[in-house]
Amino acid sequence: MAVDYSSGAVHATNVLHFLCHETGGLGASDVSNMVQDLGTAWVNDIWKGVSSDGWTTTQFTAVYAKIEGQPGVKRVRLADATLGSQAHSADYANTAWLINWETSDPRRGGKPRSYLPGVYQTSEADAADISTGVVSAVNTGIGTFLTHLAGLTKGQLVCDNLVEYSTVNGKAYRNAGATFPILSGVCSGIIATQRRRVDRLRA
Image 1: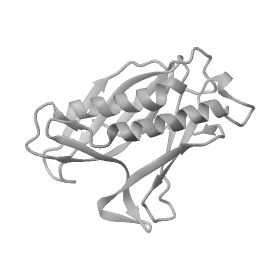
Image 2 (image 1 turned 90 degrees about the vertical axis):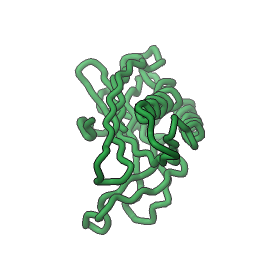
Image 3 (image 1 turned 120 degrees about the vertical axis):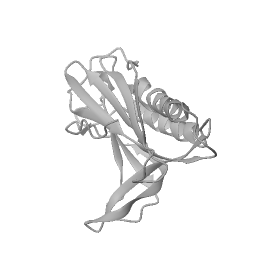
Image 4 (image 1 turned 90 degrees about the horizontal axis):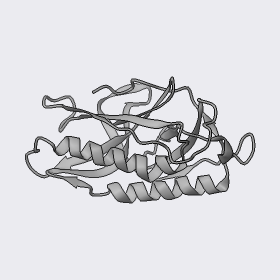
């Protein structure tokens, strides 16, 4: 799933991978309802409370397949318009909150990260560091989000985990992607910068 954001002419995207299973034949709206709930949980649990109201979400997009590479792929695009809740001026466009995820991936490179847009100027303790209150709020939101999605059910579709999704191992492409459950996440206390990656997932 991709969560897209905008602030004027600036755009950002978070790409998230979820492992789900079906308990029966999927209803027509099961996937779209799941995408809506997962996207809303991500935005409300983690992002909204710590982000400038100069930023807004724009849409959730997702690609769902029961078996990788097989027919029957379902594509979902849902509009969203949630404003950040902090009435403060947004910081530079390339600044972000950095979440470092912990997974069961034993590989050296198995350290997924998420860069959250919406940093506001008064959230900074100094030129490099985020205030401890904001770090704590992001960490609380991460815990709420992971609890929220565990076992989330929509019709015949059940969410198992937020996962790291890997298509490469040892500089070679895998025959099929591997997933590693994300166990927890921690917000870095240092302001992160990242060139925005857009159009990473199309529906």
